[in-house]
Length: 256
Ligand SMILES: Nc1ncnc2c1ncn2[C@@H]1O[C@H](COP(=O)(O)OP(=O)(O)OP(=O)(O)O)[C@@H](O)[C@H]1O
Ligand SMILES: [Mg+2]
Image (tube, rainbow, N blue to C red):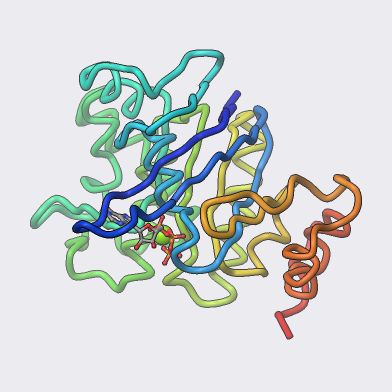
């Protein structure tokens, strides 16, 4: 479904050495699979997602979605790809000024199926996300965790075949995080969605089928069955209980 081939993106800095944000990443996410990309702050996770979302062009390498290289699309083609094929839960909560919860969540559906049908179709997911009591509340007055769930509903609304999630539980409490991660995993299974989940929360990695570790723009690990751990990953392993040594259905113990 999603294949990254030797992807490189260096950010220029004002005169100094460019930041090697993504530095030769190759990986794959299959349909119905939940893959976690785990790495410390500044390791290149968001940059990688913006490449997959065709918001930014790579310096070199390819982003293949169902065999099509989306890194060479025109602006119009990229916009259509994001609307019809992709769900992107990003770290910026872009809300319609003054819009209510339903309107904000249904925004993509307004374009694809129309306003009335869009509003109707998005409501069950908002209820599943615990926002049933807030459907007509102004979204810009919600708590950060509630806004994050509106964004999750929007990203899932068009039933995309590829879902990117950038710290989707970053503003949620432990219980709500669990529910959201379980929901995302169910969506993958039910709809055959390929999910790339970016996180620096070791608990979140326990929900994934496979875990990749990103350090300074490079992948340090491929998957749980990949054989001996590299020293970099071995150092992280205690915080990845279960995710590296197996794929339990319950979250791992908190990091030590
Ligand atoms: N547009 C940009 N111009 C210059 N440098 C950038 C740009 N975007 C990101 N960077 C740098 O690239 C590196 C990777 O950034 P990125 O946002 O991808 O990290 P991240 O893993 O998502 O971090 P976090 O967990 O804090 O969100 C960082 O050192 C960052 O400062
Ligand atoms: Mg980030």
